[in-house]
Image 1 (cartoon, rainbow, N blue to C red):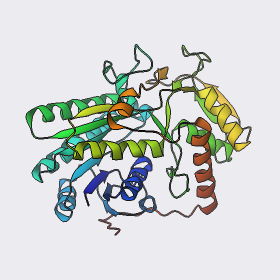
Image 2 (cartoon, one colour):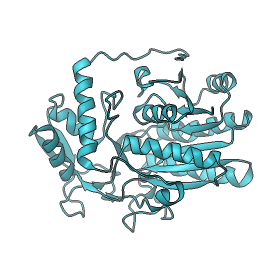
Image 3 (tube, rainbow, N blue to C red):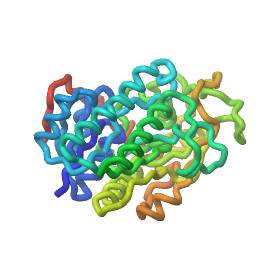
Image 4 (cartoon, rainbow, N blue to C red):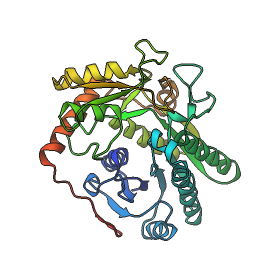
Length: 340
């Protein structure tokens, strides 16, 4: 059985990937500082608590476990925050990745799956955007991911090292069995914000900008269910383990929805007519981001199962209701936690 280290493995996306790996016959080792993740989200496998730039802690995890491959998603991901705190984003997302890569080299681990983002494209000239499009990020978050991508390309040319970069579009939804889902109290993603407003835990939903060059004036995004995103990681892993060459793939559905369309769909699913406030644009938001997902389907055989906006929203809504009903999740307060 292959041992797969998942950095950020207790977070929203990472925990779903850990679950997917375990259910697919791999042994997952989650590594997370729990700043945005939760111990309860790691349903099986091991969880080690530590920071991505802590070389001593990382070295201990590699020494304790025989790691076969690494999936790296321990990153800061909020676009507006990246504009306010660029140093924090470059430090965590670029230097953190370098720290991890150096430890991998020290332990002879040469297979790497990198969590990137559609933000590397900036404002694409062609929609849907394909993997060979120019990278022109317009915010520090996208810049930090583009820098890390370039580092991977350079290492691959110089050493015995292979990687798959997965460029996420907008992850949403939750485990259909409501075991895990978005747990951050201050989650910024649109669908989560809509659902929490529908549930009454937020007074109103803010929509940033109604004057974009789109059919209804609001931003358009490609929303991918977190389970389909997780399955893309297992397919990428199998590809590398079977000798596949380094490559980059978009993770999206080739279909976009505007902010207004998402709000309408959430109101339909929840039955709640929640208040919406329209305010000025935020800096760093491109008008339209839709994935051309042809390549990942053709080369990795990825076959999404949840490509339906109402299904995505329904799974997230079921999770949100469960989360609010229980409201007793605990956050581990530090130390090297090992859950067998």
